[in-house]
Image (tube, helix red, strand yellow):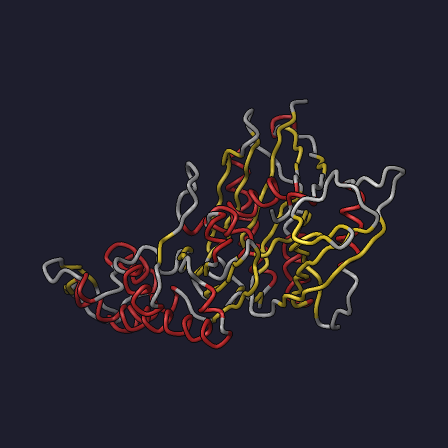
Length: 406
């Protein structure tokens, strides 16, 4: 029986379901060996509204990824996004065990678990915990206490809580597709793993993941996630504007947006003509790229104005010397989106996408981030047998709390 070091991630989004399978190579890095994408059904604005349709979409995406990677998956890591995320700061304290008072993995895990002890509202559920800093016998600012000597170990950490209903519906949908949920990872944390640099997260940066139905705004400062919010607007709204404005099917509007879309009218070429067939018309007609940009620009402006308003409302816009990074498939393909964002947000803006062979498009940011986050930060490994052997795979879960967020 040949075993493969496999880790799988599932990005359950409003417009698409993306399954990514990574395999650990000899250099202890992940290679993308399986990708599966299917249209998302049963999800609106990041919330599951039809479990059966969601299960079908998950099954299609996973099957495509399994066939490409030639494996049978038993479990996956999934993302959690939505407007019901809460970050609560809390402290955990434990006495260091052992004769030499040397801090071990067990001590670190115990103190992190101690930080989880907090009153949780009945409609919330703890998704994860992010260590901010460790404190040994009163000395703070410690990132890695492993091997240090002390009698008391403390940790300041953010507790991530999400809606119980949303979490349970996500888990139920994945389980009904025949998979176990190995872990739930916050979408912004996953994307930041591969999109943001360490310097950006230390200085202060906004990660703008603009998807199909929602736009996730996340603020990183001092190396930690300090704020996250979701706006119910994204690339699908641009597509709908094109479909309504030109009286064409939504599928055709999406294709035109990706091929010819511009976020700024000034970037639209009046000499580039696009042939369309309007609903109800017998003959095709033509519009210019500039005509298309006149439909797109107002909606893209609205998206970035709403993002700036959210950043200003919370006071976090002053904490962004590194500016903002845009990812996700909502506006990434639009010419001039980076320039327009920089103008409205009044800060440096760059575009970010995963630099992985076969998965280097922004639509894969969260999915690839999930498996990298699980592999690098928590040391998760899924051991799955070769598909040709037709033997059910088993998984081994290994944690290294020191590397969780540092």
